[in-house]
Image (cartoon, rainbow, N blue to C red):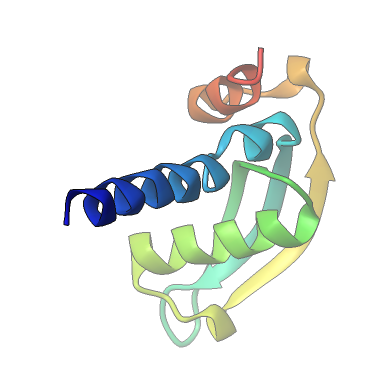
Length: 104
């Protein structure tokens, strides 16, 4: 009975080691996403948000999730005008800057 318990612990440790987020932080990049979302039937709110992601598609998905959760807007009512890759000197959001420097 004890050996079965130990085997489960070893398997859990191996699984936890494979789920590490370390490699994901190494390839993070900063993106600036511009667009607008619908406030009411006739009113659109422009936005510019910096996000950290591995690629442009991930940055757009992250932005859609952020706007949707903050303002209760469905993805269909969010228009993306452009996605721009930022250099480290251009980053103003402290959270994005921290995520990019976490790899060091």
